[in-house]
Image 1 (cartoon, one colour):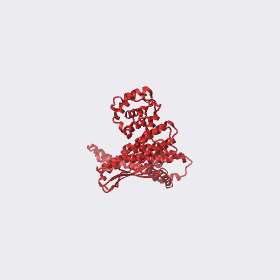
Image 2: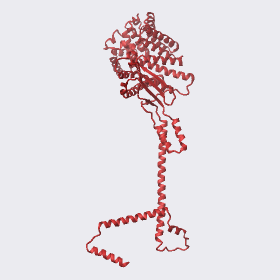
Image 3: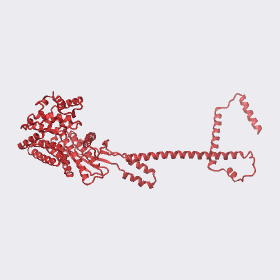
Image 4: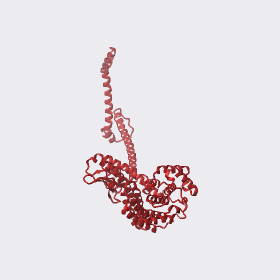
Length: 563
């Protein structure tokens, strides 16, 4: 053995002395051999950890001697291997414990996050407004290409209309004082598909929960379904040559709390033209979307009626809703057609059925008949004005407030003027003279009363009822009413009011001058007497015919109504 080693050393020395070095491939072989040795030791240690060795069993089975024995040189490898195995086992247990702790922490955090997300999605759900794309049932193939654009235009207009209605609702609630209904601050954005996030989350959780929990997870979908409104829109037509177009809306409550409604908005006879079908549908879209916005807002208010309102209390609450939307339909008729007069009449009649002791629906119904009658002529106009006179009488009999009765009497006098009957006209003039006797117009703060007076004089001027200076008086009272109207609720309506069309040629200029004066004198709406007259005269000056005829007497006004 020694000789062999000496021989190898001599060979190595001979190679070194002869100038030959160890080649690179040989170094690589040595390194690979070391790697294999390390892997062998590591693999052997793991196998020893998973499967006790024969040597360890023999050591454990061997009885422990009472005397301390000095291990022999041959026992050292077995003792070292056993210690290595024990160390590896302890290390793996520690790593496993740490890993399990980390897993539990992650699972706990994920569980908290999922529960929080689930609770958030359940209790912070907002009402959905699903508006499907238009369905073409008109049998006109040329409409198919414009359906996507028409559908998107309808959603865009619906958002604008609902904002306007929501603003009117808020103004109405402020004027009426504390109410039970509070409109939500956020409007639902019309979309084509419902929000499925809650259902998808519950479905995903069901895949990771035990089978015993599946019924409970499915119950979440039933207990907390999506809520809101779904609208299906269909394009209609009448006649082979598309003589009349219509848009049908099917409104469905998603959770089933309200009954569904199906309604078709048709073209008015006056709006039928020879334009292309797509252009006619776009024009009809304005009236149709206005109706849809009012109907959706009404359903929202009806659904918000408190559950503890029963019997007569519930009927009166709903009567106020119908009365409010009857007034909104009346206001919409000037811009969107006669359809809204019929809708207003239906709403106000329903309000009267629910609350017959309340004067307001009678007055609004009379205003609707009178205004609608003004858009007709002949016997039809006479019939509507007579209906208005009857409703005004019912309103006066039901009202207990004398200041409100004054306003209603002016409305009745307006209907009397529009009947065309000589006796009714004379009675209307006498009624106005009676109301203005001993009355100081510069101290009047009731904007509605002043506005109605302006409308009465405007109608008297239009029909040539023989009322002196009717035009200038109408304009003066209109300025008084708008200046007193600090909330600005009458400003927009005055420009569209058919009763005032004969006196509003320069309304844009008048509006500019009034706003300028209100900026200069912010306290003007509350001023009375000469201070108020001084500033209103400055507004009327320089408006051409607006200032003609003088300012009148301003106290009882008897000289203005000499018939």
